[in-house]
Image (cartoon, rainbow, N blue to C red; front, side, top):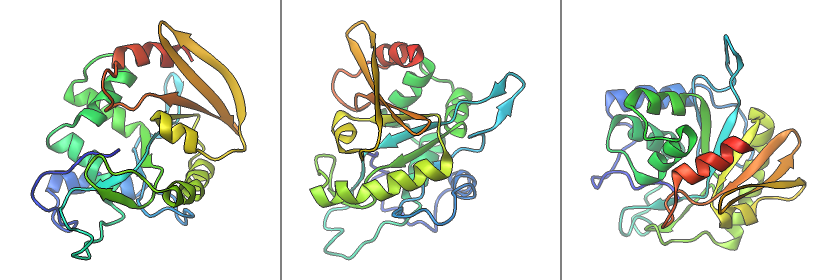
Length: 228
């Protein structure tokens, strides 16, 4: 699940200047007319770009859902904006870091990132959540079966529009909720870690343990991901 923003209520028209710049950079790259998508994906500036060594692999990081952090938000009629996902990543780069995103960075790099490396990681990939609704209050809130089901359209829409090479699916439960229409691939083993894989068109989806789960080892998952 996504992180909790700071304790003070966040108004979308009042992010910090640095946060606003990063959010706008993400939003400027969101493909138009994404079916079933409410929360805009955070599309990094270097996603799909080439370097002197060739094209950068297109990686899509897929989380499960957002949860509400304000008590009684539903009773107050509070509606979180479509920019929430982009705000979360921008906040990771400009404010306090959070375990979920930091563990993703460490998994991709194989080490704790410097600020410059952190910025490079998020500029090179796409992040979004599967469920397109707030699932409830607090990190223990779970999506309903209907929420899981309606996430299929957004998944397929983003997959078709952004054409990632790899989807890193964060969480075993989320993996089990993905839509069908895939080709099963042989799993990759590294030590005690098994990387389940499947193919959606030309895109390889990989099952990763939830980065916020107890006992998650970014170093161990880095080893198995780099083998795949």
